[in-house]
Length: 271
Image (tube, rainbow, N blue to C red):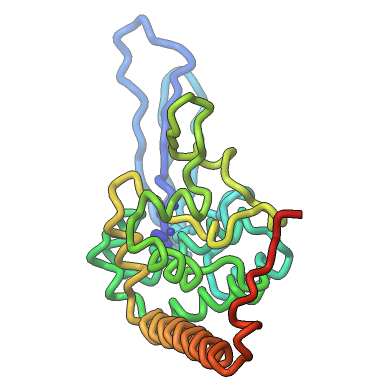
């Protein structure tokens, strides 16, 4: 499962001199002789024995060349921003939203990540809690709670932080058509799911590249931005377990209060 700073360039001034012919005699070569007039301009007169004189004028007070910033190519990607991500997700353009999310992480991780073009796992700590929560919130809002880092965190915890089980669960790995049960990573980008359908696995997006290892993804999922939500999910799960145990206890007590013939009755489900 990602921005260089803009630079200004000074256009180089190229000069070339073209010779239209060569002299076969011993006459002296053409000479430039400067002269100054009353207006402050400097004139150069070309003296040659083979052609009439030609005068060129240079203004002494002419301005220096103006630095020119090259225009961005028409097909260059837009600058990543929270607003761009919001618009892409609102349009259900999950493919581009995934690219923007990756670019945002690079931008938010610091100058070194921007120069390098990708994020080291040790740089995740520099991404603010607020920014990461905002990105996660947008993914959840525009996927009916199906996508997002916090969704992945919950599924990762349910997989006991086993990345292989987790990748299978969220569909980053596919089952191979072999006699023995085997899985392999999906090929990016064609084999991933860019539309939210009924069979799209929960937590499938956004993607985080794990080719260099799982430390980057692990640091994202354990970021303080998702600690509180993880604790809330754990508290909810513990409450559900406690409620189920209480309900079972009540059923057991009800069974003791029933008449003997009802306690001895064993239903037959063989039909």
